[in-house]
Image (cartoon, rainbow, N blue to C red):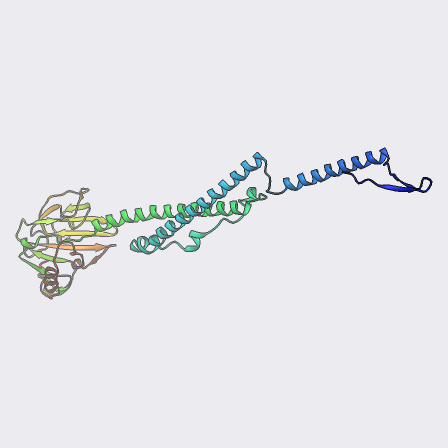
Length: 325
Protein backbone atom coordinates (compact mmCIF):
# COMPACT_ATOMS: atom_id res chain seq x y z
CA UNK A 1 0.00 0.00 0.00
CA UNK A 2 1.36 3.42 -1.00
CA UNK A 3 2.45 5.70 1.83
CA UNK A 4 0.10 8.70 2.26
CA UNK A 5 1.81 12.07 2.69
CA UNK A 6 0.34 15.22 4.33
CA UNK A 7 1.21 18.93 4.48
CA UNK A 8 0.23 21.69 7.03
CA UNK A 9 -2.19 24.33 5.76
CA UNK A 10 -1.72 27.55 7.82
CA UNK A 11 -4.94 29.01 6.50
CA UNK A 12 -7.07 26.31 7.95
CA UNK A 13 -4.68 25.43 10.69
CA UNK A 14 -4.95 21.76 9.67
CA UNK A 15 -3.12 18.96 7.82
CA UNK A 16 -4.14 18.21 4.28
CA UNK A 17 -3.45 15.12 2.22
CA UNK A 18 -0.93 15.56 -0.62
CA UNK A 19 -2.52 14.40 -3.84
CA UNK A 20 0.19 13.22 -6.37
CA UNK A 21 0.04 14.61 -9.87
CA UNK A 22 -1.23 12.24 -12.52
CA UNK A 23 1.78 12.93 -14.82
CA UNK A 24 4.22 11.98 -12.10
CA UNK A 25 2.26 8.87 -11.38
CA UNK A 26 2.36 7.81 -15.02
CA UNK A 27 6.07 8.63 -15.18
CA UNK A 28 6.77 6.36 -12.16
CA UNK A 29 4.80 3.55 -13.71
CA UNK A 30 6.70 3.93 -16.98
CA UNK A 31 10.05 3.96 -15.15
CA UNK A 32 9.09 0.83 -13.25
CA UNK A 33 8.05 -1.00 -16.42
CA UNK A 34 11.24 0.10 -18.24
CA UNK A 35 13.44 -0.94 -15.33
CA UNK A 36 11.72 -4.29 -15.11
CA UNK A 37 12.13 -4.85 -18.86
CA UNK A 38 15.84 -3.88 -18.71
CA UNK A 39 16.44 -6.10 -15.70
CA UNK A 40 14.67 -8.99 -17.45
CA UNK A 41 16.73 -8.53 -20.64
CA UNK A 42 20.00 -8.45 -18.71
CA UNK A 43 18.93 -11.52 -16.77
CA UNK A 44 18.10 -13.34 -19.99
CA UNK A 45 21.51 -12.48 -21.48
CA UNK A 46 23.21 -13.75 -18.34
CA UNK A 47 21.28 -17.01 -18.40
CA UNK A 48 21.93 -17.57 -22.11
CA UNK A 49 25.68 -17.17 -21.56
CA UNK A 50 25.87 -19.62 -18.68
CA UNK A 51 25.19 -23.34 -18.34
CA UNK A 52 22.29 -22.77 -15.99
CA UNK A 53 19.78 -22.89 -18.81
CA UNK A 54 20.37 -24.55 -22.22
CA UNK A 55 18.16 -24.77 -25.23
CA UNK A 56 17.26 -28.23 -26.60
CA UNK A 57 19.67 -27.68 -29.50
CA UNK A 58 22.47 -26.76 -27.11
CA UNK A 59 21.74 -29.81 -25.00
CA UNK A 60 21.87 -31.98 -28.12
CA UNK A 61 25.17 -30.42 -29.22
CA UNK A 62 26.57 -30.83 -25.73
CA UNK A 63 25.72 -34.54 -25.77
CA UNK A 64 27.35 -34.83 -29.21
CA UNK A 65 30.54 -33.18 -27.96
CA UNK A 66 30.64 -35.50 -24.94
CA UNK A 67 30.16 -38.49 -27.24
CA UNK A 68 32.99 -37.32 -29.51
CA UNK A 69 35.26 -36.84 -26.50
CA UNK A 70 34.42 -40.38 -25.36
CA UNK A 71 35.14 -41.73 -28.86
CA UNK A 72 38.48 -39.87 -28.90
CA UNK A 73 39.38 -41.45 -25.54
CA UNK A 74 38.52 -44.90 -26.87
CA UNK A 75 40.47 -44.20 -30.07
CA UNK A 76 43.49 -43.09 -28.03
CA UNK A 77 43.42 -46.31 -26.01
CA UNK A 78 43.13 -48.38 -29.18
CA UNK A 79 46.08 -46.51 -30.70
CA UNK A 80 48.11 -47.15 -27.57
CA UNK A 81 47.38 -50.87 -27.88
CA UNK A 82 48.30 -50.82 -31.59
CA UNK A 83 51.53 -48.96 -30.80
CA UNK A 84 52.43 -51.55 -28.15
CA UNK A 85 51.76 -54.44 -30.55
CA UNK A 86 53.76 -52.71 -33.29
CA UNK A 87 56.65 -52.05 -30.90
CA UNK A 88 56.71 -55.75 -29.97
CA UNK A 89 56.67 -56.83 -33.63
CA UNK A 90 59.41 -54.32 -34.48
CA UNK A 91 61.57 -55.58 -31.62
CA UNK A 92 61.21 -59.20 -32.74
CA UNK A 93 61.75 -58.13 -36.35
CA UNK A 94 65.06 -56.41 -35.55
CA UNK A 95 66.38 -58.76 -32.86
CA UNK A 96 65.16 -62.16 -34.07
CA UNK A 97 63.97 -62.35 -37.66
CA UNK A 98 66.41 -59.98 -39.33
CA UNK A 99 69.26 -61.17 -37.10
CA UNK A 100 68.59 -64.81 -37.99
CA UNK A 101 68.52 -64.09 -41.71
CA UNK A 102 71.58 -61.83 -41.47
CA UNK A 103 69.71 -58.70 -42.56
CA UNK A 104 70.46 -55.25 -41.19
CA UNK A 105 67.99 -54.00 -38.53
CA UNK A 106 65.74 -51.10 -39.54
CA UNK A 107 66.93 -47.93 -37.69
CA UNK A 108 64.60 -46.57 -35.00
CA UNK A 109 64.61 -43.09 -36.56
CA UNK A 110 63.37 -44.57 -39.84
CA UNK A 111 60.51 -46.37 -38.10
CA UNK A 112 59.51 -43.30 -36.03
CA UNK A 113 60.10 -40.62 -38.66
CA UNK A 114 57.36 -37.98 -39.03
CA UNK A 115 56.32 -36.07 -42.11
CA UNK A 116 58.33 -33.00 -43.05
CA UNK A 117 57.60 -30.25 -45.53
CA UNK A 118 54.01 -29.06 -46.02
CA UNK A 119 51.73 -28.77 -42.98
CA UNK A 120 49.49 -31.80 -43.45
CA UNK A 121 47.06 -30.69 -40.74
CA UNK A 122 46.38 -27.06 -41.68
CA UNK A 123 42.74 -27.83 -42.51
CA UNK A 124 42.24 -29.07 -38.93
CA UNK A 125 43.39 -25.83 -37.30
CA UNK A 126 41.10 -23.12 -35.88
CA UNK A 127 38.58 -25.35 -34.07
CA UNK A 128 37.92 -25.67 -30.34
CA UNK A 129 39.49 -29.13 -30.21
CA UNK A 130 42.05 -28.67 -33.00
CA UNK A 131 44.97 -29.75 -30.83
CA UNK A 132 43.32 -33.07 -29.93
CA UNK A 133 42.24 -33.75 -33.54
CA UNK A 134 45.70 -32.90 -34.96
CA UNK A 135 47.44 -35.06 -32.36
CA UNK A 136 45.21 -38.06 -33.13
CA UNK A 137 45.64 -37.55 -36.89
CA UNK A 138 49.43 -37.33 -36.52
CA UNK A 139 49.56 -40.51 -34.44
CA UNK A 140 47.39 -42.35 -36.96
CA UNK A 141 49.66 -41.24 -39.81
CA UNK A 142 52.78 -42.41 -37.95
CA UNK A 143 51.15 -45.76 -37.10
CA UNK A 144 50.16 -46.19 -40.74
CA UNK A 145 53.73 -45.42 -41.84
CA UNK A 146 55.14 -47.86 -39.26
CA UNK A 147 52.79 -50.55 -40.54
CA UNK A 148 53.88 -49.95 -44.14
CA UNK A 149 57.57 -50.18 -43.12
CA UNK A 150 56.90 -53.32 -41.07
CA UNK A 151 54.90 -54.89 -43.89
CA UNK A 152 57.78 -54.32 -46.32
CA UNK A 153 60.21 -55.71 -43.75
CA UNK A 154 58.12 -58.88 -43.32
CA UNK A 155 57.94 -59.25 -47.10
CA UNK A 156 61.74 -59.06 -47.14
CA UNK A 157 61.98 -61.58 -44.27
CA UNK A 158 59.62 -63.95 -46.10
CA UNK A 159 61.82 -63.71 -49.19
CA UNK A 160 64.97 -64.25 -47.10
CA UNK A 161 63.31 -67.24 -45.40
CA UNK A 162 62.46 -68.72 -48.78
CA UNK A 163 66.03 -68.15 -49.97
CA UNK A 164 67.36 -69.59 -46.69
CA UNK A 165 65.20 -72.68 -47.16
CA UNK A 166 66.47 -73.07 -50.70
CA UNK A 167 70.06 -72.53 -49.50
CA UNK A 168 69.73 -75.16 -46.74
CA UNK A 169 68.29 -77.63 -49.26
CA UNK A 170 70.96 -76.80 -51.85
CA UNK A 171 74.12 -77.00 -49.71
CA UNK A 172 75.82 -80.41 -50.21
CA UNK A 173 75.08 -81.81 -46.76
CA UNK A 174 75.17 -85.63 -46.89
CA UNK A 175 77.72 -88.29 -47.70
CA UNK A 176 77.44 -89.31 -51.39
CA UNK A 177 77.89 -93.02 -50.58
CA UNK A 178 76.14 -94.73 -47.67
CA UNK A 179 78.35 -95.98 -44.85
CA UNK A 180 77.01 -99.52 -45.15
CA UNK A 181 78.15 -99.57 -48.80
CA UNK A 182 81.68 -98.34 -48.07
CA UNK A 183 84.78 -100.51 -47.87
CA UNK A 184 86.63 -97.53 -46.40
CA UNK A 185 87.20 -93.81 -46.71
CA UNK A 186 90.40 -94.04 -48.74
CA UNK A 187 91.74 -90.51 -48.89
CA UNK A 188 90.85 -87.04 -47.71
CA UNK A 189 91.35 -83.46 -48.84
CA UNK A 190 94.97 -82.22 -48.74
CA UNK A 191 98.48 -83.19 -49.77
CA UNK A 192 98.61 -86.87 -50.74
CA UNK A 193 100.89 -89.23 -52.67
CA UNK A 194 99.87 -89.56 -56.32
CA UNK A 195 99.29 -93.27 -57.12
CA UNK A 196 100.86 -92.94 -60.57
CA UNK A 197 103.75 -90.45 -60.17
CA UNK A 198 104.40 -91.23 -56.45
CA UNK A 199 104.96 -87.50 -55.84
CA UNK A 200 103.07 -85.44 -53.26
CA UNK A 201 100.17 -83.66 -54.88
CA UNK A 202 97.25 -81.59 -53.67
CA UNK A 203 94.22 -83.88 -53.55
CA UNK A 204 91.21 -81.54 -53.85
CA UNK A 205 88.47 -83.97 -52.95
CA UNK A 206 87.66 -87.13 -50.98
CA UNK A 207 87.95 -90.75 -52.16
CA UNK A 208 85.36 -93.31 -51.02
CA UNK A 209 86.33 -96.94 -51.72
CA UNK A 210 83.30 -99.05 -52.63
CA UNK A 211 82.51 -101.97 -54.94
CA UNK A 212 81.78 -101.27 -58.57
CA UNK A 213 78.08 -100.46 -59.03
CA UNK A 214 77.59 -99.00 -55.54
CA UNK A 215 74.85 -96.31 -55.64
CA UNK A 216 75.90 -92.64 -55.51
CA UNK A 217 73.48 -90.00 -54.22
CA UNK A 218 73.12 -86.24 -54.84
CA UNK A 219 74.30 -84.41 -51.74
CA UNK A 220 72.02 -81.41 -52.26
CA UNK A 221 69.25 -80.00 -54.47
CA UNK A 222 70.41 -78.69 -57.82
CA UNK A 223 70.66 -79.08 -61.58
CA UNK A 224 72.93 -81.53 -63.39
CA UNK A 225 75.26 -79.44 -65.55
CA UNK A 226 77.44 -82.29 -66.80
CA UNK A 227 77.16 -86.08 -67.07
CA UNK A 228 79.99 -87.13 -69.40
CA UNK A 229 83.61 -88.33 -69.63
CA UNK A 230 85.00 -85.27 -71.41
CA UNK A 231 87.01 -83.88 -68.51
CA UNK A 232 90.60 -85.12 -68.21
CA UNK A 233 91.24 -87.58 -65.38
CA UNK A 234 87.68 -87.72 -64.01
CA UNK A 235 86.40 -90.40 -66.40
CA UNK A 236 82.64 -90.67 -66.30
CA UNK A 237 81.58 -87.94 -63.92
CA UNK A 238 78.60 -85.81 -62.88
CA UNK A 239 78.51 -82.16 -61.87
CA UNK A 240 75.56 -80.65 -60.00
CA UNK A 241 75.07 -76.90 -59.72
CA UNK A 242 73.34 -76.25 -56.39
CA UNK A 243 73.10 -72.48 -56.76
CA UNK A 244 74.40 -69.96 -54.22
CA UNK A 245 77.91 -70.59 -55.61
CA UNK A 246 77.96 -74.33 -54.69
CA UNK A 247 78.81 -77.17 -57.08
CA UNK A 248 79.46 -80.86 -56.36
CA UNK A 249 81.42 -83.30 -58.56
CA UNK A 250 81.25 -87.12 -58.62
CA UNK A 251 84.04 -88.84 -60.62
CA UNK A 252 85.18 -92.29 -61.91
CA UNK A 253 81.59 -93.57 -62.28
CA UNK A 254 80.66 -96.82 -64.02
CA UNK A 255 77.36 -95.40 -65.33
CA UNK A 256 74.90 -92.51 -64.91
CA UNK A 257 71.36 -92.39 -63.59
CA UNK A 258 70.80 -88.74 -64.60
CA UNK A 259 71.35 -86.58 -67.65
CA UNK A 260 72.46 -83.02 -68.31
CA UNK A 261 69.83 -80.39 -67.39
CA UNK A 262 67.95 -82.70 -65.01
CA UNK A 263 66.89 -81.29 -61.62
CA UNK A 264 67.68 -83.46 -58.61
CA UNK A 265 66.90 -83.46 -54.90
CA UNK A 266 69.21 -84.30 -52.03
CA UNK A 267 69.37 -88.10 -51.73
CA UNK A 268 68.38 -88.85 -55.35
CA UNK A 269 70.27 -91.72 -57.00
CA UNK A 270 72.48 -90.15 -59.69
CA UNK A 271 75.04 -92.81 -60.64
CA UNK A 272 77.17 -95.80 -59.67
CA UNK A 273 80.74 -96.27 -58.45
CA UNK A 274 83.24 -97.30 -61.12
CA UNK A 275 86.91 -97.15 -62.09
CA UNK A 276 86.89 -94.92 -65.18
CA UNK A 277 89.39 -92.19 -65.94
CA UNK A 278 92.60 -91.71 -63.97
CA UNK A 279 91.76 -94.18 -61.21
CA UNK A 280 93.68 -96.97 -59.52
CA UNK A 281 90.70 -98.92 -58.11
CA UNK A 282 86.91 -98.71 -57.95
CA UNK A 283 86.01 -95.67 -55.84
CA UNK A 284 84.13 -92.37 -55.88
CA UNK A 285 86.15 -89.17 -56.06
CA UNK A 286 83.94 -86.44 -54.57
CA UNK A 287 84.52 -82.67 -54.71
CA UNK A 288 82.68 -79.57 -53.43
CA UNK A 289 83.24 -76.21 -55.09
CA UNK A 290 82.29 -72.80 -53.69
CA UNK A 291 82.43 -69.81 -56.01
CA UNK A 292 84.71 -71.77 -58.35
CA UNK A 293 87.17 -72.82 -55.64
CA UNK A 294 87.51 -76.43 -54.46
CA UNK A 295 86.96 -76.74 -50.70
CA UNK A 296 87.17 -79.58 -48.18
CA UNK A 297 83.98 -81.71 -48.45
CA UNK A 298 84.38 -83.01 -44.89
CA UNK A 299 82.73 -79.83 -43.61
CA UNK A 300 79.46 -80.72 -45.37
CA UNK A 301 78.38 -84.06 -43.89
CA UNK A 302 76.22 -82.77 -41.04
CA UNK A 303 73.09 -84.15 -42.68
CA UNK A 304 73.95 -87.86 -42.64
CA UNK A 305 76.62 -88.73 -40.05
CA UNK A 306 76.50 -89.18 -36.31
CA UNK A 307 79.13 -87.50 -34.14
CA UNK A 308 81.02 -90.81 -33.81
CA UNK A 309 80.89 -91.51 -37.56
CA UNK A 310 82.10 -87.99 -38.32
CA UNK A 311 84.98 -88.35 -35.84
CA UNK A 312 86.08 -91.61 -37.48
CA UNK A 313 85.88 -90.04 -40.94
CA UNK A 314 87.90 -87.05 -39.76
CA UNK A 315 90.62 -89.35 -38.44
CA UNK A 316 90.93 -91.22 -41.76
CA UNK A 317 90.67 -88.07 -43.86
CA UNK A 318 93.58 -86.47 -42.06
CA UNK A 319 95.96 -89.39 -42.73
CA UNK A 320 98.53 -88.50 -45.41
CA UNK A 321 98.21 -91.69 -47.40
CA UNK A 322 98.08 -92.41 -51.11
CA UNK A 323 95.06 -91.23 -53.03
CA UNK A 324 93.30 -93.44 -55.58
CA UNK A 325 93.35 -90.89 -58.44
